[in-house]
Structure formats: C-alpha cells, structure tokens
Length: 221
Image 1 (tube, rainbow, N blue to C red):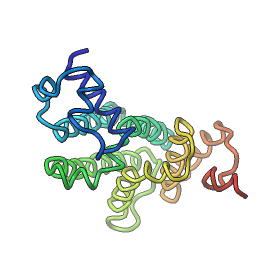
Image 2 (image 1 turned 30 degrees about the horizontal axis):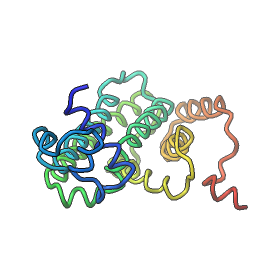
Image 3 (image 1 turned 30 degrees about the vertical axis):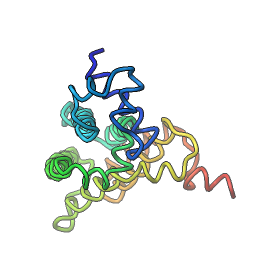
Image 4 (image 1 turned 180 degrees about the vertical axis):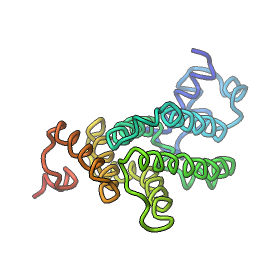
C-alpha cells in the first residue's frame, strides 16, 4: 500500500474512533511511524485528508447509483441498495456525525455537497419516474409530491447514523437492515397494487417479527 493510502486509512480509523477534535497530523504520523514532515508531503493538514475521505465516500455511494438497470428498479432493489449504502456510510461515519462542523471548517466540502444534492435529486427523480413506468409507484397525485419525498429521503440518509448510535448498543448488518426497512416502508403509500404485492412478497420471505420500534426500547418493556 502506498504511503498516501496508508495515511488515509489510518486517518479514517482515528477520525471514526476518536472524533474530529482529537486527530492531528502528529497522531496520524505517530501511528504510521513516519515523521509529520513526511505526512505533510502528501497532505498539508488534517482538513486536506478529510476532504479526500469525503470524496472517497461520495465515489463509493455514486457507484451504486450508476450501475443499475431500469427494469430492476423495485422496492426490493431500493431496500438492498439502502443496506449497502448504510454499510459504506458506517465505514466513514465521522463524516456524518460531524458533518455540520466539517462543512463550517472546510468550505469546499459544503459547496461540493450542495452541488451533489442537486445531482442526487435529479437522479432519484429519474428512479421515481422509472418506477412509475414499471407500475411500481403511482402517478404523482399532487404536483411536487415526489420531489418533496426525494428530499425527505436525502435528509433521512444523512441523519440515520446519529440516531443509530443513540438507540443501538451494537452495530452491524442488523442496524443497516433496520434503517433500510424504515426508509423503504415510507414508499408504501405511493405504491401501485403491483408494487405493494412485490413489497409484501419479499418482506414475507424475510420472515421478520412484527415491527415494534427500536430494539433497545423493546428490551425495557
């Protein structure tokens, strides 16, 4: 592994485990047993490292959007993609947990993210239109309804991880499935009869217990 990649890997580990305020050029260099000067040859400061890690996250999430087939769009596809994306987000969790602080501190990330959200709105609207064409979702009954719904999903995607750290004592696949289920269930009011049958079919195959809320809350009942 190249030194640059080792720096990014170690910085991500420290940022995820220690938090934004406790990670420095010196702490990263010390863990890698290199000099701070050697590290700053590759990245002039921690903010430059964070920006590179942010771009890595964006690229990883973009790949799942770009490799899809229109005929495959369904509630099950949406669910599987959500689980996969949440796993990627967990791997870069410091970005979601400290995003407001990061965007205040690193202006290019804020500017890039605003442009990214605009792009995501267009992409997700394309998905919605294709699901309408596939007879999975109903035609829009109120002008702008699906555009509002798409923004709600984007906001949800940005916020789920903070909620998970409060309500789950352990983390892994079960957490990603929990939040993916919440996200996809919000589609139900917009589904056609065909879409609802498809949704209920794969839900039945999973043989899940009835939904009652957060596991931590259930354990106290």
